[in-house]
Image (spheres, one colour):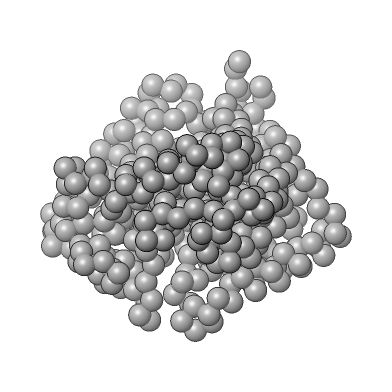
Length: 408
């Protein structure tokens, strides 16, 4: 199979109603900062999301079409609700997260109901890029020790006395690392800006002391360097060029690190303490308990809320959580369209969609992300990008004004 790439100067404008475009951009921004804004507005984000979805349905003339992803997510959630019938309700997960999960399932169903325009998708990528970078800058300027732990090495963004879990902070910070690395290596646009973004957000991730976040950043940069993209002419030569650029960026980062060692050394010490990784904040113990629940109910799960982990703690693994709730049956329903999206993006060399999907799936290995907006947002954006590729044969870039059309 040969892929011939040609550039077209014709641009496709953003066909979504401006009010929906603005509201979706606001929703993305709220996804990053809603924990901090809760100091002033409480949990108003869910009401904003409800208003946006109602308006979206109205603007779509109440015509919402199901597709492979939304059908699978909807089927999984209906089955998850049905599983309450055989749940012992030993934890309060249903009561705590029912409405938030309804909101995210509706968001998937409505937003992906048709192919979105290039202008809309490109704007969403830029808003994620900008919000993540802003989150990184603020995380360095307004950092404080995470108050829920005794380790002062874990520094997180603190605004108006509000904080977020370091691992969740790292997931939001990773968005700009992935998009910045992609733009720097693949689009070859705004390289100085992208290098600054990657360095700043990588430094902020180190401050959080999040091992999962550190792994995410490494995988995103490695993926941007090593995975093939649509505009690669000679894969081996392009990879060498990307590695050379990364060496320069890494050298600059090391020089800066040597100047500000006192800021980052505690976080680095925690990340590089490999002899302490086995415990992983008790994750291995929590996963062992979860596996015992799965062994007892492998096919259909314990039912939503039908199990307990030590002292009511979360499992810290989204896939194990799904297995505990809905068993192998539920996990297969949930993960199959996501795997399809990733494989299709890889096949078509749509590297930006692959990296976006990694931002969702990698943190989910060490976090309970099923109720987190970065998890769902990345899945939704990746699927919308693949929808666009399937419909038009063109690729979405972050900064390029031209479009790429692939003839396969």
